[in-house]
Image (cartoon, rainbow, N blue to C red):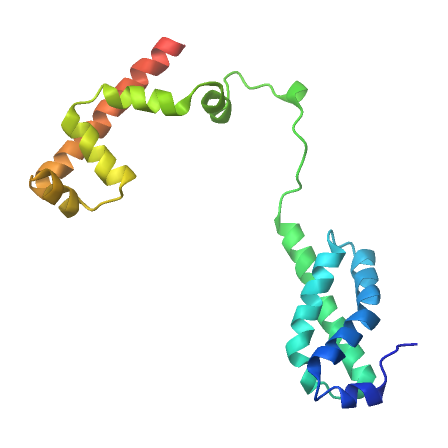
Length: 183
């Protein structure tokens, strides 16, 4: 039997905080059990979500303790359905088994983590002219517009666009050469 009575619900309309505490203590174990039995991965977390949704509606509950119970478990049911819908659309996580990995080339992550990516990027930038390096620093790192870079470098916006295009083309060539050398 619930410790929540119709009298308490009626009296709690003035003091929402104390009513909420009492309601939470009375119903949270049952809600968590309901969610756990329903297959929710994190029943405690979803229980908290249920009561966060209950709180603003607490003062508008009709039907006394029974109406409150119906409200709480309606919200819990909706959260349970949401959980299963979300899970049905999400791929099942699997542990990585290196023994089953039959790739012939290293992954991009392995390549970056094995080498010093920052040092490689700086070395590639050193292969560019000063104007090319400056355009890339201002456009990519500083995230400035073409007009702002043109103003800073005292060049036309068209010249900045051309410098950026040529700088990126040079970087592609350097990357291809470096990839061939590494192979």
